Length: 106
Image 1 (tube, rainbow, N blue to C red):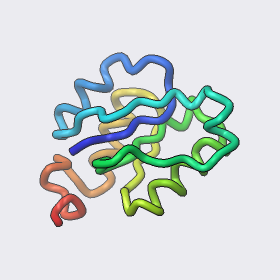
Image 2: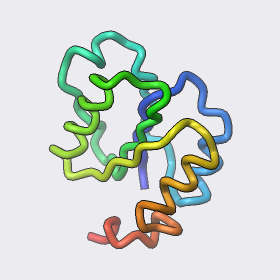
Image 3: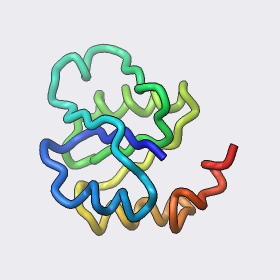
């Protein structure tokens, strides 16, 4: 499954955690660009999940990407940018492994 990550300048160990859940990073957006705050966003094609790192994002950027995900029918996972918070959020969305998640079955 492909994930779009929004927030955080550096990802650190995040890619390793995502790989444990069968996710790969399709695109990483820091959210610092002012245009992310002012205009509607579009998700890259093939996006399966949007992960928002809430401690590095403003409300307008989060809203823009939540709306884009809703329009595309893509689930959103929101958490702080830490390995523990990400693992907890991914497990809390009902998936021990995202590949086994009922929402990922078409």
